[in-house]
Amino acid sequence: MQKVSFFKSIHVKLVLIYVLLIVIALQIIGIYFSKELEDSLKGNFQDSILQRMELVQYSIREEMLKESNETNSTSTTTPTPESGIDAILREFSTDDINEIRVIDRRNRILATSDRDNQSMVGQRSNDDIVRTAMSVEALQDNIALDKQTMPMQRVWVLAAPITDTVGPNSEVLGAIYIESNIEKVYEQMSEINRIFAAGIAVSLAITIILGILVARTITRPISDMRKQAQAMSKGNFSRKVRVYGTDEIGQLAIAFNHLTNRLQESQSTTEAERRKLASVLSNMTDGVIATDRKGKIILINEPALSLLHDTRESTLNRPIASVLGLDQEYSFEDLIHMKESVSLDFSTSDAPYILRANFSVIQKETGFVNGLITVLHDITEQEKIDMERREFVANVSHELRTPLTTMRSYLEALADGAWRDENIAPTFLNVTQTETERMIRLVNDLLQLSKMDSQEYELNFEFVEFNKFFTHIIDRFEMSKSKNVEFLRLLPETSYFVDVDADKLTQVMDNIISNSLKYSPDGGNIRFGVTVHENMLRVMISDDGMGIPKENVGRIFDRFYRVDRARARSMGGSGLGLAIAREMIEAHGGRIWAESEEGVGTTVFFTLPFELDGAGDWE
Ligand code: ATP
Ligand code: MG
Image 1 (cartoon, rainbow, N blue to C red):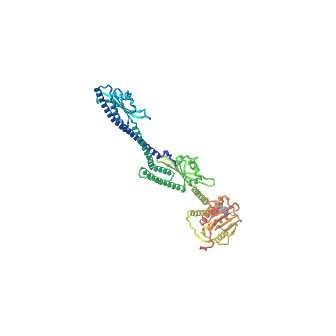
Image 2 (spheres, rainbow, N blue to C red):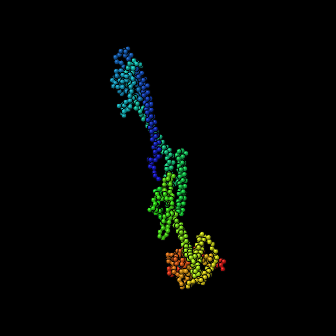
Image 3 (cartoon, rainbow, N blue to C red):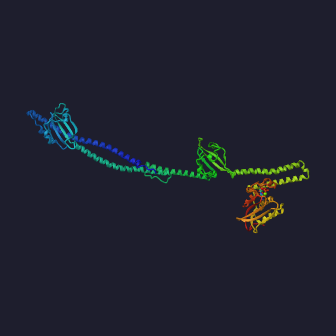
């Protein structure tokens, strides 16, 4: 899971924003507050000083006016108002006033409240502020640094003119100079500011803690959801986000859980669909191959792989035309437009192997080709059956044409007048009769085979003691044989009972024995044997005849198969006898095969299920 670094987390960002906002707000409040406080404290201080100054101003004016009247009436040359003024100054001097000075109109200091500095009385005043106050006849003030104190303190310096009357035509009598200690106000202010700052620090600390807690309530569900989203991307849908409340984030968490459920549902449906499709694809017998729009294989099912004898690794992402071995004849474009199916011939000299491929295009509504689906069937068997059928028809027509053409020529000769010749006519008629019989036999054989093919025949089972049954057939052949062939019976003493259709089995054995007779030389042997192998009765008929070439032995049970057609036909065979025999023996639950060596002899074996006691209804 990707970690969100601490400083980039929303939690920290929220707290930071919150704290910054509070700091800014407090800062603004603080500035406003201290400004207002300063104004108000300073105003109060100055008002109180001014009030007192007015009183002083009034008292001194009165004193000065009184003294000037006295001076005018008594005409004393050295007026001494100082003592009266001194008394006033003493009365008014307080803690917050450093010094009060009274200056007369000629800029001479008349009195000072400063006890340590009485020497300045009578001297000229150098203060500009006093001169300005007298000349403009208005109150002057400024804040200055008192150089006598260490560290230097701020003082409020005031100079006010003293006039004889109040009004436009007044005359300036002198001025008052007041130096008040405003530093106390500033000290008070910084004390208040300190308290205020401490308050801010405490409240900031509390709000930071609260902010962290509040931010947690927002960020915790969000980080929960983040974790869940990450788990979901890994396919884990079991987690649920905790819902902490009903606010927007709570709603979001509910919606998120809902989304998880829906996603899980739709994912499991998709997964089920995918599995269904996969199982359909792998369980169908046809091979299916899908390509992308460029013809590269993107999906191939098991049957397709086994039909093509290929592996998934070597086929995926390869062009389909080359996998199907069609790249010489067709391009992918050709396959897209292919309407008919294409036969893929993978036959080798040993075995035929033919596949059929059908193509269908995956197309969008716009006609844009998105891919190609190829379906493969194994049609080897079908092709083989088709070929056999064609061969069969050719064989039948050939077999019928030979006797028919023979008959036609004989009948033509008879019609041309041979019928009148008493020597030739019977022979010719005899030939046509033989050929007709041969045709009838052939047609009967074919009918029998066709019945067997369509399972239309019934077997009439009966219990037969096999040795007795076999001996009976051999006897019949021995009596009617035309060749000098010796029959050797290798039959066991034990009685073996078989449940068979006696007529059909007789037909089978007739054919095998007549073949042996047919192909045996004069003076040869034919051996008849019965043994038991693997719980089956094994019957053997063996001759010393011309034999069959090794490679053809397996084929003598095929329809119309004869080792040497010309000779066999001259011996009256059509090649259906053993084919019928095989069908019959298999219908009885047995097996038939032959072993042979050219020039040495042939042995035909067949097996039948048997029982040791004849509980059946044989006689
Ligand atoms: P049909 O039996 O229909 O009259 P057929 O005897 O030629 O004709 P099958 O009995 O099916 O046909 O035998 C098929 C072929 O197998 C024969 O044509 C013959 O070439 C060969 N064959 C069968 N039995 C022997 C044998 N004992 N010795 C040598 N060749 C044999
Ligand atoms: Mg035969």
